[in-house]
Image (tube, rainbow, N blue to C red; front, side, top):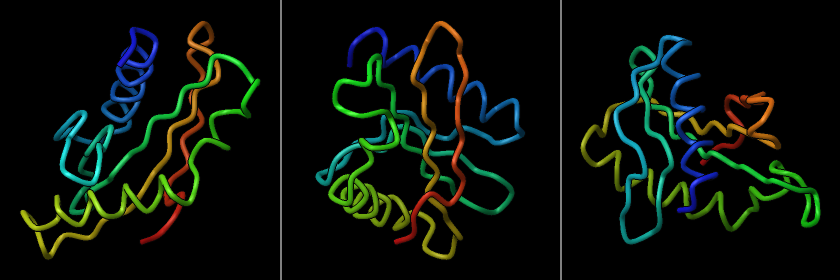
Length: 113
């Protein structure tokens, strides 16, 4: 991961913590891919995808969360959930188009499994 991507993830983890979530894991990897942030909000596990785009040349951050990316995240989350099979979960997306402003668009329940 490059420096800008790492900074984007740190900003998003900080936002989640300030909102009262407990960050359980960062960059959790398995054979299906990686989950950027795993957090807990009450009894709900939150699988968060951080998307940072420095320019609009290939579309903004929201356009980069494709159906294929969603499928990989769901598959990875299923493996994570083997640790806590009874947990409720949701998939959030955190979008940044500028590190300078630090403005983050947080889409809760961005997609479902």
